[in-house]
Image (cartoon, rainbow, N blue to C red):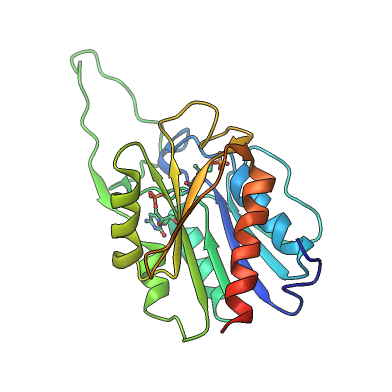
Length: 223
Ligand code: PMT
């Protein structure tokens, strides 16, 4: 990777998994550790970009030399991403965002009762951050999503490029052990809006991130 290839560019990267509270002691979440998003943020920094890293509940220490913002919920992530995106050239959303949250957050710990053997939780849709970003995106701003899929990787990821109006999506098969959520390695397919596909080998998240940044740097030069 050429150092300085993204010098002067402002980049926003999201990482980690949102937590959606149910009561003061419980929440809904997913297995994201923040490793993939942190590797992307670090690779952008190495390429000379000015990086804002917005992380939901990461399990690891953030890289140095980036503007680091910590959030908990999808609503908080949305607010921070929107604010940072206004001044950004590139957004990469590696965060695993909850599509639904509990309809009510109890202010006291929810108790079990002697007679209730089952409990039903009502969930409501969270905003789709990438769809909201699509409505404020200017020409020249690059927006890249990730797609975590357990089945039909390429067709599901392709649908997300269209529905979320992305320039590119990083399709991540999360059904394979040793890659994806919380693993140190990953294997992804870069899918471009125009249809081109590039599949990586299984390699460290740092190496996958370097390939992503190289693709982005090439795209920015051709713009
Ligand atoms: O953090 P790690 O442990 O290293 O794991 C990495 C990873 C598996 C989390 C990462 O590689 C990955 O695939 N991230 C995307 C996870 C995800 O939420 O995918 P999705 O297919 O549900 O969402 C598609 C895209 O829309 C994502 O860019 C997501 O950030 C975005 N999204 C999703 C829901 C929502 N309400 N708003 C969004 O913007």
